[in-house]
Length: 220
Image (cartoon, rainbow, N blue to C red):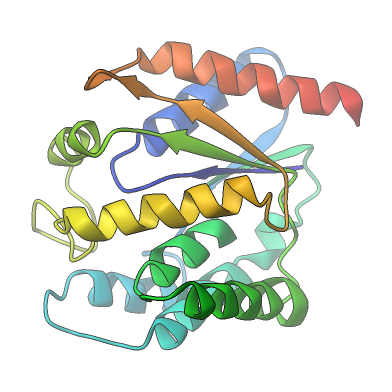
């Protein structure tokens, strides 16, 4: 089973991934955790890091999406590993949301969504996640969380090229909402991680997600 943690930048996915992993380990549930892009582990991931660290480099959304897709393809042996649960900090839906957000019309967005699903799932045979868990967060709270991030391998800046653009993050959020409302290509669950510009306790968020995962395991 693959559980994909999805959301705009700074929505607390990485923290939740670690806390959920700790809880699953405490309950004796074997699992694997992955974070995409895999900057230090795949050739595609290292190229993506250079792109995200460039404030000026502009590339076609289709070109960029191909790099993200290949990063997952290079990691496919881990995604299909013989373990009950794989936790992913970002997965295919991130490729959809962050690149589709660069288009201006619904027609372009719909065409892009169909294209990336065909590329990743159809041609590169990326496994479909059991559940996409969307971290719904207010933009102001997300910005504060980004500022608190520890140093990342691909940038020395406080924000990368996408994180610093609030309007872009707003557009990403809108694409995620579209995917959820249309239940696009996989099951979705929305987790509210902030309210009134305050973040919910991370352990509370992680407990909610852990319960979702255990529930799915019990149905399998």
